[in-house]
Amino acid sequence: MGQLLLVDDAGLAEPGSALLQRLQDAPELVAVTDGMAGVERFTQLVARGTPPLLVVVDEVLPRIAGRNVLRAIRAVERAFGLQPTAALLYASAPADESMKAFLSEVGRAVHLVRPADQPIQEQARRFVLASRKLLSQVRG
Amino acid sequence: MADLKKRMECPSCGTMVPVEHALEGDYLLSSCRLCGLGLDVTRASRALKNQFQPAGDIHTSSAGMPAMRHTQSGSMAAVRPTQSGSMAAVRPSHTGSMRAMGAADSAERPPPVMSAPVKQMRKVHLVEDSDFLRQITRDLLNERQLAQEIAEAPDGQAFIEAYTRDVQHGEKPDLIVLDVRMPGIDGREAAYAIRAIETAMGARPTPILFFSAVLCDDEFKAQLRDLGNARYIRKSDGGDPNQLGNRVVSVLERLVGVRQQG
Image 1 (cartoon, rainbow over the protein chains, first blue to last red):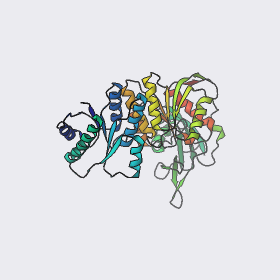
Image 2: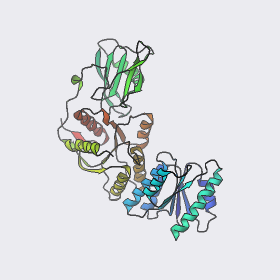
Image 3: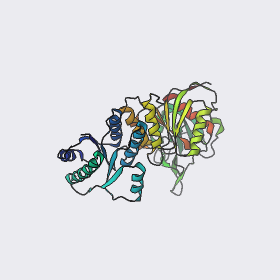
Image 4: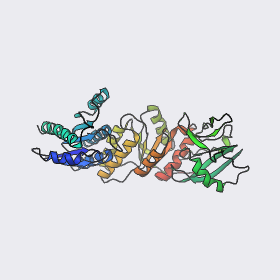
């Protein structure tokens, strides 16, 4: 089954959880609302030997910004000798050169445009659809 | 003109530290001599007025207290209205403390402390993106014999990786010296990340010393409280390496309990 770690402070967890439950082999949703809690929860999972299948991170977060949450996660993985976890950065702006360079730097990460002007249900539906695709790739 | 030395609580260090005051006309300036923070004169002077026994009168601006503003170097300086109505700044001295121009310097400079420490830290993580500044900081720690081992990292990512590995292997350092402005993960985010990792792995928080040119504003002060066991020193105030070294030692005495003889 595995886990999906969602780091988002804009209300994705509740509608996202409901939508994820409808998927075949639905992952367990582990949701936190700021960047520091994201790094903490990821490290906990890794230390227990159960790293998440997928990490979904909002770009704008309190304490540690989304991109740097992913950088910190990569540092923790290297310390534990793990391969990079699949990651999705949910950002309201389309990918520019800086974003492409960032994705190349962290590796095994994709960018998804967040329709910030749409209702939260639509924002959740979009990330769940992308997550389904990524999870199927992860599981082979 | 009267130069006065009193003690007050520094909002950055949180401890009673010597505060330097230079009074001249309607100048009233102060800065913490430990961490280099320009103090809020408006608040500080209310408490200090009662402590002062100055040779001359204390003068304040027509508004009652002088305003503070940032200088180009990023430090704070008191300002006063000029006759033309514009605001004139008083420049920080080369030692980093703020005083009225022309104030005597040597009389107030504390003697350098160069003797060997009584208590030494086992390991320090030093995180600084500038090779030059990393070398200076490393030399300072070595010359003062403050640490047996210094693990260096040029950015936040490398530091988080090394720190996580240390916690995993039960080799947590005694101190982290962190630059604030760095590419990628900056010092403050790196500090939050390692606090998160400590919580996740059941480790106690390692003391953090932010060693930075960035001014310690209200947001930064709130972050220091949020992080816990963290202090700040302004490295740009250290024109005199001995004085900077003494300030570092003084803060470390409180933060990690290092002691020097003499």
